[in-house]
Length: 331
Length: 262
Image (cartoon, rainbow over all chains, first blue to last red; front, top):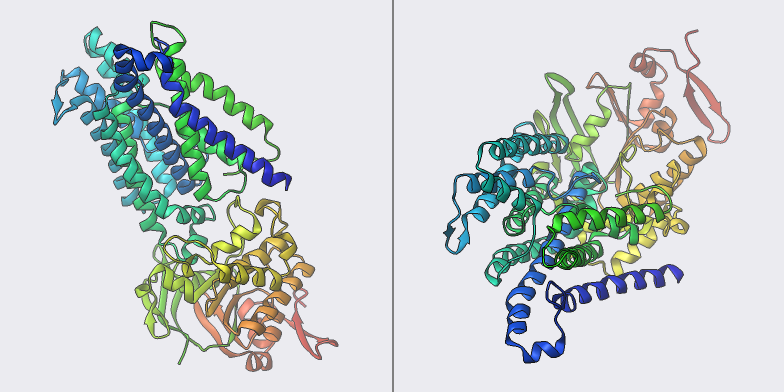
């Protein structure tokens, strides 16, 4: 009974936190807004509805999407260190964006900036390369992870090279992009990210029971009725596309994808992926939304890149949960 | 009609044939023991039947249908598999883990129904692990874990149960508990069993048929009665060491053991 109460309390806190993140945080920023002011000032209405709401929604969807993709990769590879960026997604996206910035491709394609297109192409390209490589070597998950680490490292080296040879203003722009952020997200960019992420979440919702089996090992999953190879392929490809969509709008925001699912595993030990996914999505979304709120309120009128906040706030929080946890840590 | 037919089955690792031209017919209700030295191809054979390894030549037929033509779910409804040992730490409760065995029988949303819960409870009772159902899997002992694995296989309600040395890491007491659970389940469900074992006496006393493999080829294939009548000679050539019969007063039969070169 005590366990059940604890479970309900924790789930309630996560849901309330998500509610606060979505409905309260848009009032906070460089300009603090009040409900009363919102009804009377057109300037505040503009700030609230045109700037803050799409930004908050983008942060929530991006955080939730990154948390789900982290959860998926951790289960697929049975590796607690797997993150949305494990297969070189972050490296590929950053390289794509860096090349676009360096070559001055700052225009747009069907209303989407070329930098976003480049980062999406880089993210998906990196995963496809890693995946084809591992496929040619028998589709072993260890090969896949190692190839991902190598691609990420090579991309990082290439980004440094691009940094080195481009003019200072491009170099600064690249650096800022790599730090990630949801500032300046319009409704158009929110939709560009939210539609593929929404489709991804729907697909994952159908496939969640299969993830439960991946944690029991490939052999057992196979004999329990999972087409392991096909299922893993589907998960990897749809997850890569979703991460590509998120990164192309928000840049490579780190830590959310690794922190949120692990925090949920610790808060709800033994939980199967259906509930874990819901909690991870809400916690990831809440975490990134709060981090973004801190990023725009901590040093007004300047904004701190949200990637710095996610690492500085999320790191100690994660260590705290890890410290409080009794017994060994399992996926 | 045979439930399982192996036709000219050959499995290779790199270029070496681990299972070589094996032919076998298994009928419903039979209990087969697969014995042989380490590396004889026993586990490889069972994994090939489970669809975990693809054969180089030949085929595995289930109810006269080629195994590769089965969908993953259809295969899981026909074959259940208990591995020697789990290679991973499973973060679920015993009950949830056993429920995973119902996956192939569940619908699109994989939501368990009353029937699924009943089958899980029944399997947990058969395997004498009902009192462990709320425990987390990593907290189980080796013997408990194997019985939970058996319960997970039983809820699949498959007609063919494959067991790959399920008691090799267990002490004699836990081994006995495991086989008691298996006997209980067998009596209730009357499925067909293929069990890889190093225990010659299990093969003779608990199984209806014996398949002895030597370097991937069949050394003996027949009833356990005939196998018993040809022991210990068949064991001596299979393992390359002398076996001796010992009288078992309780079973009123002979058991076999070896105490080194005489």
